[in-house]
Image 1 (cartoon, rainbow, N blue to C red):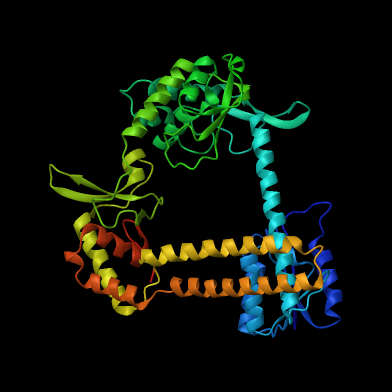
Image 2 (cartoon, rainbow, N blue to C red; image 1 turned 30 degrees about the vertical axis):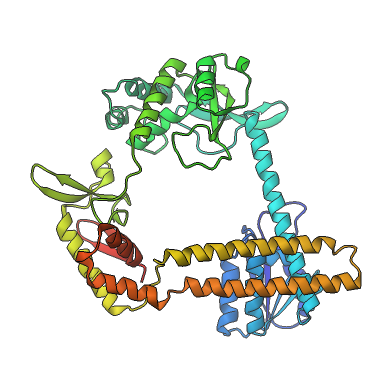
Length: 499
């Protein structure tokens, strides 16, 4: 049985259709019986494609007796060197032939395998070059103030326009929604109003939920941070200049009429208050919040972010694992010192009252119940799939980095293929084979490290036996190793395990 695989990410006039690919592969099958697998709308950058996965499953199971795979072209099945190498290794072990309808490779010889890897290397290079062109085009268009997609913010509607001869879009104000946004800024400018107060105040305004999304505390912060609403003048220019933001437009463009687009830059920083990791562009639409009011609100938001600490869980060793079964928001521990009692509460109900919650959950009783569930689970399973060994994780990352380096070395080697003599080709083939051998060995090491070693398993099980004596952090490590997520409602407790 032959397997024909076809893939098309997007339909273009200059791209070959899936039907045409299959037709070419049918000719290559020479009348033999075949089964077709086709993925439409999926990229070749990875193997997360339903029909590809189904084909590999059928090959491994042997149910359909697949002995050969035919594709129209190499890049139809993969544009990743690592994925392609893994696939070919599987084919080799199962004695499955591989053929391209438009390319000819003899995978039984070292030279054939080397040339196959060279072609897939260039396919990956083509994909990455295309991605870079898309990124460059995005940056160029965004710096000209063109509409770059995404949800339309409250206060505006999207209208099609032509700017500098290029069709794009811009925002146009919706008066009813503008009043909601103005109310948010007006209330936020007073330190006496919390985000919860503001959300409550505007929630009942006629246009506050026009997007079918209720205004919550978090959304109030989103409104305040967005310069799309401001009338950008020199105050705004100086504000962002003082924060280190990259400003595309010259100062004379800040005349107090237009809003702004703020894009994330290329700098590697996770600090929410660091506006140096941003690019500001004057937008074509008109703003409606005065700069003084906008800056006052933005400064207050920045101050609040700066005084917040990155909270390290200290109230419960189950922190981050418990979710409300009704809304999916986090369940957090709340202690009432006057009554000397602690409860687990739905954060959405607690903050915005937009969820019925999970009922009354006494924290001590709940933690004990989860502890007993963990003990039952560990008694049934002796192998833990969650990786707790940080040294192993670090080693895996090092090995993955080496694989990336090998791919770069192969790319450098094949640069001389075009004009290479037979002697040089022999040298190239030898080097590529050595690198591929090293890569396979590294992949085997990654697989071995990814599988839980007995010492790690024994360490977790041993520690769990003296769980109540452990430090808070160790309890958290063990809980995260055993449990993936806990969903709780008034009537139900569901634990999703890692083991």
